[in-house]
Length: 248
Ligand SMILES: Nc1ncnc2c1ncn2[C@@H]1O[C@H](COP(=O)(O)OP(=O)(O)OP(=O)(O)O)[C@@H](O)[C@H]1O
Image 1 (cartoon, protein in one colour):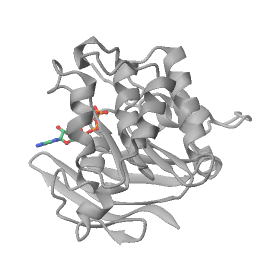
Image 2 (tube, rainbow, N blue to C red):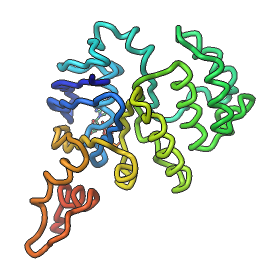
Image 3 (cartoon, rainbow, N blue to C red):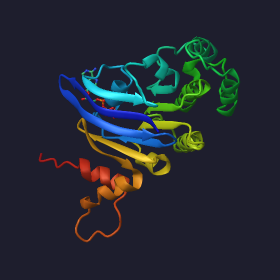
Image 4 (cartoon, helix red, strand yellow):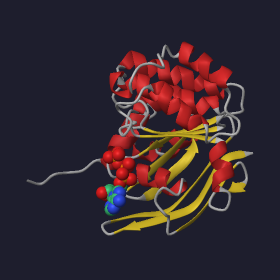
């Protein structure tokens, strides 16, 4: 079953259009959403979640239409879009107390376990956390209501290589039992090499390709130059696809 199905999302802004984005994320898999700055990654995630209202498109989570079943679907997803910036002065314990009231299946035991595993002190204030700890705290909240689908906007940006590796390892652990799925946007191509099963690539608001990683890589091999024998890496694929020539 697909954890997530996105079909034909379109969103018009005055100077940008996200056009007809379609992709599917099966259960138990990790999908990386890539594209350069301004390509439309965040707009895709926000439109999917009805945080900005898409002009058209159908979003299903676990077979349910998201727009028609928003409250039920939200019980099963964990969303991390940007940093927690409006609760900076609040203690984690206070944010958690407010958050858990929204979730019918809040699991206090699981929450305590994640605090311990992630080394988070509930008496700390948000402003006292490092970027990596903030992401981990948001994940702890998501996992404590047993979210089956995690939607994360650039969760690894701002993390040092060790913390990044640590987080990507955690992502792999989370999907291991086949119950959870993760969709995350990133600029860091090595994240995808380590962690993603599937890749969705958006360029200038349009879907360039969404496929299983090796199929994705294969489909861009026509970008090779004459005489090149080895397979192009993900980084080379993206650089060659986006390459510009400046005539100054
Ligand atoms: N609320 C808004 N009103 C008008 N235009 C917007 C709005 N939000 C985003 N845009 C425009 O939509 C385009 C895509 O932005 P988006 O944030 O989705 O890109 P992105 O791929 O997530 O970029 P980045 O990697 O830099 O985060 C940009 O041109 C941006 O200026």
